[in-house]
Amino acid sequence: MSAPAKKIQEQPKLHGILGEFKNPKALIDVSKLVVKSGYSKFDTYSPFPVHGIDKAMNLKKSKLGWIIIGHGLLGFTGAIAMMYFMSVMDYPINISGKPFFNAPAWVPITFELTVLLSAFGTVFGMFFLNGLPKLNNPLFNVDRFKKATDDGFFLCIEAEDSLFEADKVKELLKEAGATHIEEVYD
Image 1: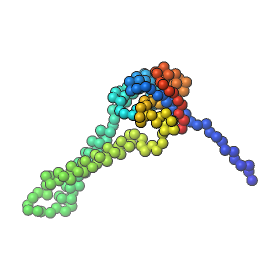
Image 2: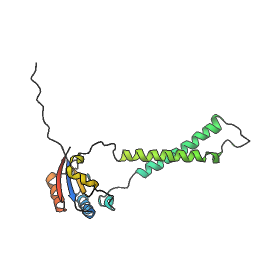
Image 3: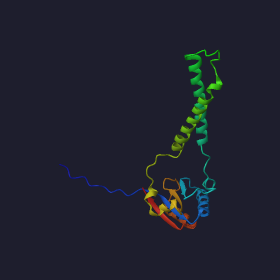
């Protein structure tokens, strides 16, 4: 028999550095500073939407609109193609001499299928673009982060950023006016 394997304790992996700020203005200012410093993997957290934070973070326009229009067009053309195939090609029925291609009668189904596929595109596109479902975030383990739903304004620079160096990030956040700085581990 071999000796029992020793359990190796791994060092917790650093997720990022979290800084807390006084108000939305400070959060916008530090976001601009972080972008100017060259960091790209960071996010901000606040209890309400902050007007202008997307511009301060240099975020690109969302692709969700294109996903929605694509699904809407797919629903529209799918509905027309389905009804045309059924009514004109597969099982044409002559009712009172009306044409097989009866567009006014197809409006409700076309509308409903367009809206249905647009809604599916919206929900699943949002999930895809946001990287959901993400069942846990290391920030949830930080006690102070609970203030993000009430009165806290936070910015976290992730360790995955190519420019990330813990000491430099802490110094940057300190100079930007962070009231509290904390390391976050996975």
